[in-house]
Image (cartoon, rainbow, N blue to C red; front, side, top):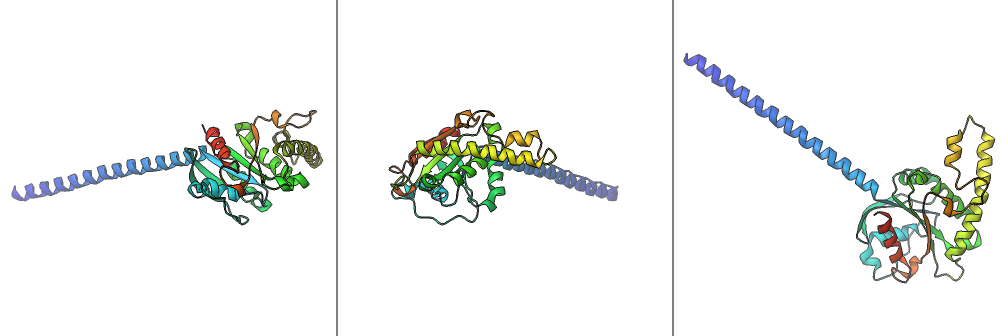
Length: 260
């Protein structure tokens, strides 16, 4: 009997250990699932407050990103001179009290795939224009803005866009009203030429959905930003003059309002 009792006690101990191990495994799985869900939720929240800064090379995108990312520095001095970005800059930031996932996309065409991927998750877009270059030749800026407005499902999501006419401290800069009018006229021309190019490729290459997604505004009517589902606002700025004098406080408030 004594030997049998010892065996039963040993089996009971093994059973207790097994049950404890099983309970621990279930708790670990629940904890892992909770962590995974938290990570997914954080990723979704990050996407829901993503602000993408886009535009041509040299327009001032990275300078704006630096200002928004490091407000404690730019509040007391002008945004430092920056170099052309060779990679996507992305960081969490707080802009006018709003938590923001801030993304600066290089303007070179070889980063187009990166830009489109970021635009697909954007809740707001700031498109920076070099107002001096636009005064001389607006076509490059119009092409870049057309690509932004026609990509990433911006129209379907009605994602707000701020066109920021930078370098207003330069006497050669065009005003935001002039830049807007020039962009509308140039996009109207680009719209026709792009549709002709798509039509020449034939239905096998581009179906009606592709054609519609690449067309901005209404057929038979001159292009106007007012015709877009995406709300487009124009403002002037000068990164060189700093936060207050350069109009950057307006950019901060626009971003906060866009994410509400």
